[in-house]
Length: 88
Image 1: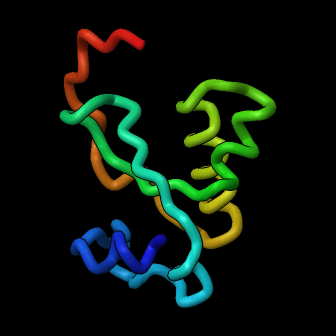
Image 2 (image 1 turned 90 degrees about the horizontal axis):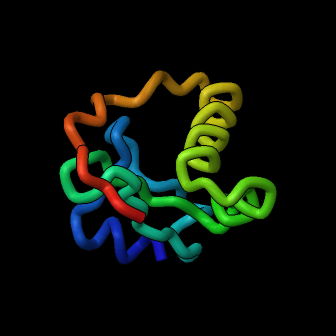
């Protein structure tokens, strides 16, 4: 649950706490570029998006666009860096 992520010191990029309504919901760690890239905590909605297109990056970017529309979120906080050599 998000409460466990928060207890481990995981925070949102914007510094705000996870929403109180989400604290008991499950969050899953996603590191699409490997350990040298960005990390995301995604919800079950991420996997609903993947029912349309199985690409992790597609689902991540669609979710991010939704956040930007709904909440006025900005772009990703940092670049992806050099993550060459990924095999999946």
